[in-house]
Length: 225
Image (cartoon, rainbow, N blue to C red; front, side, top):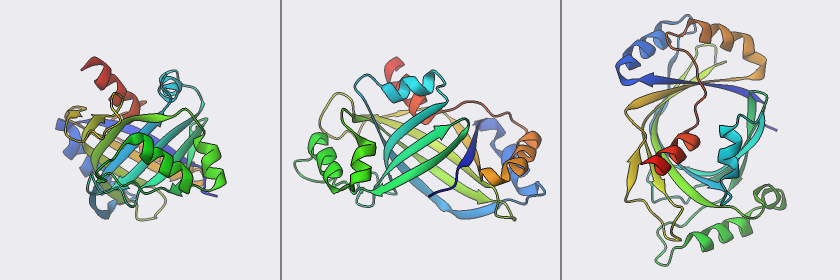
């Protein structure tokens, strides 16, 4: 089972990006690039009443996020994985299942795609997924990866965050993106065993952490666009 971990999110105004990068690279933990930048695509699933959105908005301490995630080309979801992101009292973990999607199928529909996804899941995955979910949105962004020299803390910086509304049609929408704005998002991540090291790092950061959810912000963008 995956270890519980802390995730701390710090929005970065565009004008402050270089300051944050300098802080990471000159900090005693000596962060360096871990992987090449890549695009991340996340299809968020929720009930028609947006139950997961409401849980996050209301700050429920124990909540679940359901999404399908794949990397690279937006239309190539053949390597997608179904993620159940569970969070409790500030710590979280992910439960993953392989769940490829054929977004380029001539007669693609979300109804058929999600049914196929459900059928190929093991029993445990089907139980986690449950019934009454629907595609809400696809969030796409670019991610840069960093890691501390001691390998205890990871940092990612997300940019060019866009959202594609999937609520009102059974067809795939990847042609009408909405931007979430010109800012960056720093995420600091560490297993619960390294809570002290993470706390010390956050205390030295030039910007302060805040509650931030791409899913919540995407819903707000689509509602108030």
